[in-house]
Every structure is written in C-alpha cells, then in structure tokens.
Image (cartoon, rainbow, N blue to C red; front, side, top):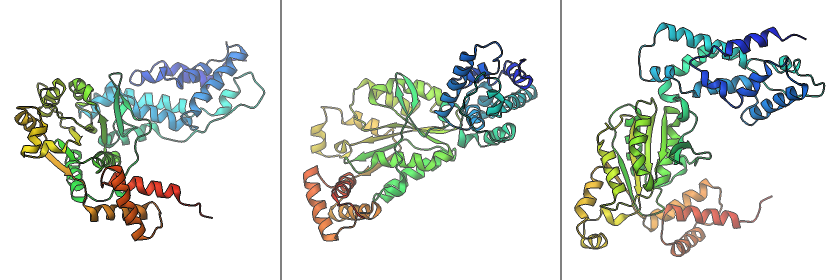
Length: 399
C-alpha cells in the first residue's frame, strides 16, 4: 500500500518551516511526524509511535488542534519578538509566517482515522479531537493584544521562580484573589494603584511592603498578580541568594510586551551585605537602564527598620542606620501592614468565618479568636484564617 498523499504532503511541507521550526522537535510533534511516514515502519513500531503520540498528547490535551495552536502562541521566535518591539516586519517574512501557519493548521486538523488507516493494527486505538480554528486569523488577533497575552515562557503562567539559575513557571501558583483578603483596604489599594500605573505603561514605583508577620503582604502581591494576569501582569520571585541574577533577569525581560513584578519575599535588609548592594544597583538601574516593564516589590517583616527611635537603632549594627535608610529610600512607595488592634482582628475573624461558611456564635468566636491569638504569637489576619480553618476541621459533618 502506498503512502497517503495528504499525509505525505504535510510531512514534506513541515520541513519548510523557518519561523516556527523549533516546534518540529517538540515532544508531542516528534512521534506525530514519524506517523506521517509509516510505509517503511515495522507494524510494531507503527503501533508504538501511535500510542506514544497519544500518550504525550493526552498528558496535555485531548484536542490536537487547540494544543498545536497553543504551542504556536507560546513559541518564542524572531518574528514575534520583532512584532512585540513594534518593528516594521518585511512583507516577505509576513508571507512566510502566513504560509507556515497554514501548514501547521493542516497538521493540527489531521483526524484519527487518517492515521489509523496507516497503522497495521486491527484493535481499538485511542483517538483525539480536532477543531476548525483559523490559525492565521487567531494568531494575528493575539499579536494585536500581545501586551496581554505575551509569548514564550511567560505566556501561560502568572508566577515564576528561579531554579538552577533559570526562570521556571510555578506549577501550582497560589490562586488567592483580592476578594479573599480582609482588612488593609487602603494599603492594598496603594499597591494596586501603583501596579495599574505599570500596566498602563507609565513610570511606576518600586514598592516595599513592611510590617508585622501574617498581615497579608505576600498575599496582597500574589492576589494583585492573579487579578491582572489577563492584562499582562507576571511575577518572578527572587530569593536573597539570587540577587546576583537580577541584572540577567532584567536583561531577559527587557523589551518583553508583558509587565513584571520582581518579587522579594521576607527581605532582610542587612547593610553592608553584597547581595543588598546588588539590590540597590537594581533599584537604581545601575549600568543597564531599569526596564519600563518591570518593578521590584519586596516584603519585609523587619518592622524595626522603619522606626526612627533609640530602640530600633539598638537592634541595628553600629553605624548602619544611614545605609539602611539609603536602601529603604530607593523604594518610591513604602506601605506598612501593622498588627491589627483587637477590634480589627475580631472583624477579620468574623469576615473570614462568613466567607468560609463557618456558622458560630459571635461571642464564642471572639473568645476563641483571642485565645488563639495568645497561643499563636499575636493578632493577625493569618492567625484569624488559621483559627477558622481549625474550627472548620473540628466541626461535625453536616447531612
């Protein structure tokens, strides 16, 4: 039996890819391409290639068309970079991209029975779905909104970390939303307004969120990222020992159409520390200009650093107050999250109980909240949440 002419043409045309050439080596595409030329295969190899392709596809999607289109949208190539920079693209390159999208669309619309006929196996084979997506129209629609969608590594995920000196997506990012958080409305609004300034493409401030532990500083930043992910906001978390990578990270995101928060959690401002010197340089822009699409947000539980009194000075090493102030001063916006008083703490607790569906007498809840705060080290939104979770866990099951 001769080769299927349609599959043969798709296989041949894939070799002509230039802009999207990296997709040919993707782990889902590789076994699919092998199946386009099954004539010379041993039947056992045919079957293995087919099931390997399905196994890899199913781990990501059951719709081949939608999955290949997602790969196209996330592909980081010279064409999408030029478009993101607002450069004029040559007509020849535009024509090349349009042709390649048509080729990939044909690949993505291959139906299960077309490949099954080429596999010498008469048992039941798993199948996949296809869609009638117009790759050319949909891809260029995304390009017109590239500041919201992005491309490459940063397109699909809201939050990233540094691992083995590489930026990698957080597999299970915290889904916290602003509506989940109680109290500190003015403080959160200040950080939100600054973030909106960044998203509008205007100069935004670096932000230092400081105060007592458990008051929601980190949760505020993550909730803001989740709220504005679909407007092109991303977060890259950087640990203190990774500060030396800041210049490299800045270079990597410079010119990217997305907007970035470079986030430092639990910042320990230690004057004289080489890592903090790198941070000061990054806050100032140093040799490389600070990118217009990024700001540094840091959270610190070192409340004493922000107090101008003898007690605070006694905690700091000799002669370091000026240097500490110098570092703090590089954050244009400083927002304090201080431990709440009794009434605010009880209000947090009542609001959380309502949100999380805990039905309990108000006086009983207040008593338990105070007892829990005494045991857990003080009043805070975190303590309130922990108490409600504990009470929910202890509550008898309802019918």
